[in-house]
Length: 406
Image 1 (cartoon, one colour):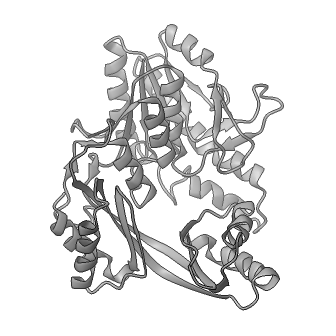
Image 2 (cartoon, rainbow, N blue to C red):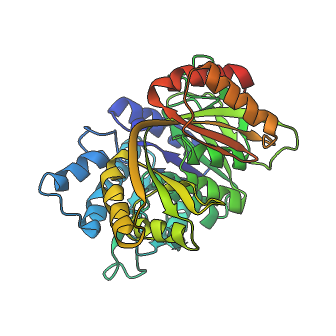
């Protein structure tokens, strides 16, 4: 079998879909059994894009009915699957479209961010044995084997990547091809760093750090799955035949920097003068988890009587996160102060064996030379991340890329 995934930008118009169909058809004629995962067509503003579908509910009111939100968000991928199946059938390539539920994807009951519990691929295998290309709606599943009793769930933004890798695992395949609108994974964002170039190979660890800290090419959970089950992942452009980037293999012993990742549009919420007692970090983090606010805790704890901790959240979650934390402070942390700062960017140096203090010093020196104020910094064996003002991101990115020359 050949497991492939095509992103929404690869399916936006008829000419793009025809190029995708040509690639799939070639594999089918060569005797492969393509199993293809598709995302919703286009991006925000396009008729069937996920954000456009979400807008249909938001236009009615601000109430958040997560079950109904999942149901409407799943429609974009179903439309893509039906359109691509029809495109292939009209080109003489027998095909069938399946929803996530019909493909046997069973998830936990967590609307908007469900994880795949298991996949029952019998229908996929039967259709492939019958000679049909199987087109599967990505990003979705169902909470029960019995469709009439289950609820449709979605896997979080970027979840079609996870669908594809999970299917490769369930179908016992060792490779998964992810096609998008870029030629592979670059050493930095080429729209910002002019010297950025394509990487032909990344380890799982490097790719996971990149996906978690600014890289939007492949979903982090997809890489986690690939790493766990040893599935090699190709990231390539659906509109040309460039070789792309392969993700796979273990960490190297030698020191090297492979990527300078750039991410804009972050918000930092900081609590200071927090009583430094056992369990205080849990008391702050728990309500955010309960309200399903995605966050990263950047700093916590102290050897003194008071502590400081910061939470990095997306701008759209900032007001709700601030409200929740204010309630915690008023109820349990008298004297603590909350401050919020938007317009923050995260710049990350990613590589193998870069935990030596020399790398941290080089990052700090380069940020100073770039005039970028470092608000928070994290240093690990395979990543050094700094939080700076968005206005300084382009200059700092160019200079760090030149410093490490990945």
